[in-house]
Image (cartoon, rainbow, N blue to C red; front, side, top):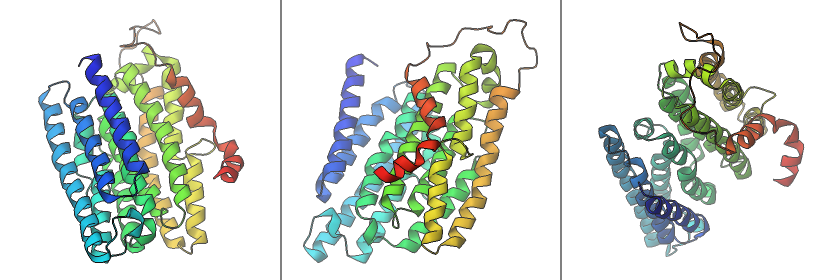
Length: 346
């Protein structure tokens, strides 16, 4: 892929995201989502591998259905209320259609089926975009319309997402699929609190982006596509493997790392809203995620290949270490002490 094509795709993704985030009209939000979808397709299919082409086709079909449902939701709401404003969503069938459309775009259960397959067929950089930047516009629409949506439906989908993300990640050996199910689980954590405290959803989303970006860039540096290659990364880049271990533990939500912050605040807010049962369920389900994160950390730092070399650095890395990795890793590990300041600013 030429630099010009990459520049056009990146600019279009930025443009589509900006249009959707800043729009108040259903048609403009839909246009921004369509620009995003068309911009990411060349990046998914750039390797021309059959798996990449399959992932591109699945992504396009699923996103087209979700965009059609979102547009149909806005049209039916305008038909019954006379308003094209996103904040004026009040017609119940339109609310249900919108919830379905956003759930498909975010990969919430039971509309998660496309996300692990698409990530597995993409490169690490494209998978990072799909897991972070491409989820920002749908999350923004969900934030704007959260006051009109059905709390029971959102809570049910969130709990199912957290359960499925942890359960399906247990058997995986491909790192991109593991990160896909991790993303499904984290989106469930964000969605369950969005009606009660939207700012907390944004805080959780920002921290999720930090941790996920750090992990994907680290794995891209060492070309870690499955657990067996993760076991050999220690001999190539011991320091990077150590920071990857800490970032994975942070993503699991272990204190005193940064990832504990959003889960702690979400559980606290759910208890304040008299949803102690939901808080207990998702706390127990997070143990499933903890298991496969611990398995990843075990493979990255404790397990060595069967025939270790006498030299510590046997091979050079695929690419030079990305300059963003130290900054992202530091933020992914050490933000928990800044919790009081973050709460005052939000």
